[in-house]
Image (cartoon, rainbow, N blue to C red):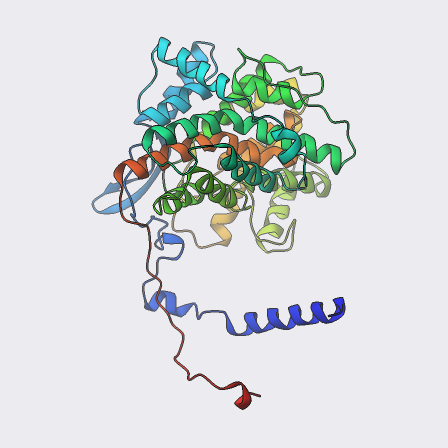
Length: 452
């Protein structure tokens, strides 16, 4: 078959699907379908219970849902308190949060030291893994590279299919420790084979936090400032978990409920996180601001900024999606607590990096966008900046390549996924299988000889 004929057939198949595959939108209302497992007010359909994290975005008053400032709890502890705690003690926080999420309580000093040592011991990848897996058939998309690496690690695990809790904890600790290497080395392979850059592979150093090791392994000279490492650590903490209803964590529950292996479960969640509506949003935020900075002549002019945002909402600006990336969240309304925490540290980093004007532009968009969205679109709840709004800016100020933005989200969220996988197995519920109603009409089978 010629390439021309192949292309023509694909086009015909696509036209057929588009012509006959669209379901009448009125049917969703008729059958009371909760699209996206959410009702019209934005409230999620309750499909499970968890002790790992809690999101608070509204209060109930006289039976009505009243939007409130967002709150996030890890194992019942307010994220604000967690962040204040390790910052006040001048410590890194991500490893402590991993322990908290996995085991349900804050570690004591000895418990933390043992856990930290366990992470260090499990960070090493199998012999020749970097050469044979990460460097082989290097992908231009690091999320695919990460998924390939995770699935390949299955072959190196003699107890890969054992879903006993002890074994899954062992696998989870190993994946938390190895994810930074898989992500950074995947980028080094991409930079070398696709961008013709020098190949530099640094081994992780014992005694360094995960955030420090990421910067150490990524940069050719392994240098970084204390502020850089601590803000990266903060981003990892804020992305580590977000309750069971987010797309990738719900994927963890769905796939785990089939009792598949840990590596398959994590690979499925990585596939979810890759999407620009989920983990890929921070990259879109950076790209949107880059376009904005080129199109707007005066970054201090509210009217000019507003006009740009209106064009986006009208699908006339940026990527024509109609989305102002980083603004709005499926759950939060008045505020995303992660964005508020991160914003307090972003200005300090912007000063260090001589990018204060960009910070001012972000602040203006954060203020103007919700007002414009509220005027132009029918909203059932408030809208505000989410964590992606500032995390992408942080990554760019840390000179991290855009290809690594979403993989770094995964480096953090593997902690939450692991906790939820363990919780699903411990509670051993039914396989997750929601209902879909068929709205197709029944038609008879026609023999081939009788078809046009």
